[in-house]
Amino acid sequence: MVKKRVAIIGAGVSGLTGIKSCLEEGLEPTCFERRNDIGGLWNFTKHVEDGCPSIYKSLVSNISKETFCFSDFPMPENFPNFLPNAKYLEYCKLYAEHFQLLKYIKFKTTVCQVQKHSDFDSNGQWVVTTENDGEKATTVFDAVTVCSGQYVYPLLPLDSFPDVNKFKGKILHSREYKEPMEFDGKKVLIIGLGNSGADLASELCTKASQVYLSSKRGVCMFRRLGRDGYPFDLSFITRFQNWIQLTGPPALSRFLCEKYMNDQFDHGFYDIKPECIEMKEPLVNEELPSRILAGLVIMKPGITKFTETSAQFVDGTKVDNLDVVIFATGYEVRFPFLDESVIEADFNEGFLYKNIFPVNLQKPTFFFIGFIQPVGPIAATVEIQNRWAMRLFKGLHRFPSNKERKDQLVENEKLRMKRFGTAKGNCRRINYIEYMDDLASNINAKPNIMKLLLTDPVLGLKIFFGTTTPYQYRLTGPGKWAGAREAILTQWDRIEKPLKTRGMKKNIERSFLPVTYLPSVLPWFLCAVILFVAIWIKG
Image (cartoon, rainbow, N blue to C red):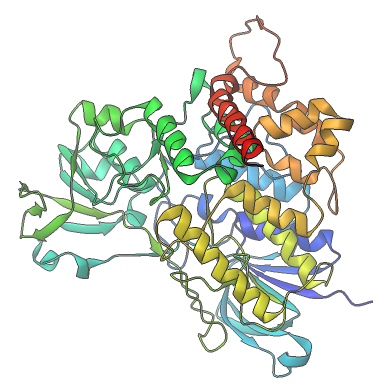
């Protein structure tokens, strides 16, 4: 029997897991990568390349290695808990080599156009036009997955800043920033308080004469260093806390999140307290507060206008003699190879069923992978998306009707309104565990916690109260990995290993839950008790 062919656009994290998911389902993948190497966003280059993601040299992961790994390939135990971009690229290469994925990738090949086959209504096929070394080729595929990434095309809203065209200094987007040396002695204004804006401000202030960081809104900021010195996400991404957040009243969830946020440092004291804690995705940075304390970074509100050498702000203040303005204003999602008449992409309102499949497409043969913003690891998320997509393509789980898909989008919009205060522009934001469980349940890969608590209580307790690591989604169902249980039970060994470099003996044997969980779990446990009592009284 001839294998069905799947085109994968991009060989980053999404593309690599896409190749592997195809192989697991007996499909024939062909991945097109315009660069000469894998890694996508995590592949640092000294110069900006058109149509490719671009990062700064000092970029470090915001999520620790045990949550940022792939579900059936733990990171080497000697890898640091938070990975510099070069280290994570090394991990991606180890993954690709281990599962023999490289032979399915066509490097230095650009996808120029994707069109429906002339007989699409019956076969659902796609015609893909590519270019390599000046030569174009056209190939028919049974399915297409877009894994080109959401951090490629910079959003530079110059029209929103009056008289910015009068400014005579240097203007650039954070995408163009690589290293701080060229800003030595400069006075720099950074616009935008996201992860990039915070990172650039923290780094640039070591070279620049002064750094100003402008933001219209505050932000929820976490440090990588969590309770008791453990990686913060180990106690933050748990099923128990997530269950309380989803079942308890929204006000309680907001209160607990705000408490966790301010336990690290008082955001109001640093003038970055968010107006609504859920309106903007959190960022991860431990250096910015100390830079603000030292006066190396000065926080500023929104900008009203520019002059030739200065910027004026909504509070009436002004900064003169500016040399550089950096817009850390994010990215817009574009697909130059895809005509709107084929699929009209609208990431402001949402157009993807399960954040994967175009809602109006009648054949399940085209998928967008990785165009999401989870408060959690992206690697595990794109992996489960690929697994879900390929099984839907093969007809191994139900394809809902057009009405059902549209109804789901409406429900998602209502949910975003409830959680974030607005639905506009939030269609990519997801609750990590809820989303992972939803897709996993569709492909029978969601762990049965109640069954595990009865048959394997140590594992069951770690899964419910401990960190929700990707290995959980390889315990059962298609793609089951025999090493999943062992990976979960030994994850703390890999967390501790890179820190034990002095040959010191361990003083305390670790229980099934790390000490850092106890103060984290206690308030959530009390909330659960109150919730149960309220339900019991009402009943």
